[in-house]
Length: 83
Image (tube, rainbow, N blue to C red; front, top):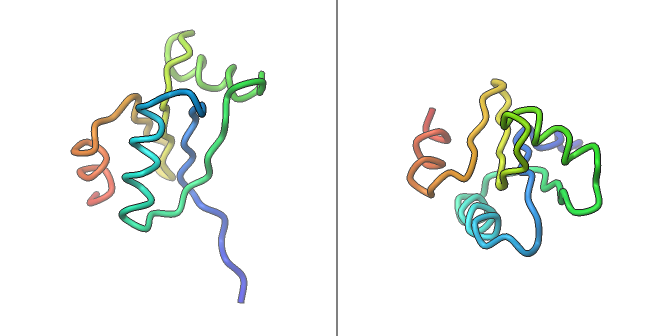
């Protein structure tokens, strides 16, 4: 049995409280995601800046449909996950 790679990507940093909150929420809902630590990752930083008008704003969460949530509240994440 193979497990598909998570389709949600959460760009964040270990020092970011909002990143921890978003990760904790996704974990509490058993949502699979890939965590990308932007610290020291120039490609990840460039991507986050690309989707945020050249600003490094985290957490930036990218969904399979191509949509992006930036610094979402737990309620915003819940609405997005419900579809």
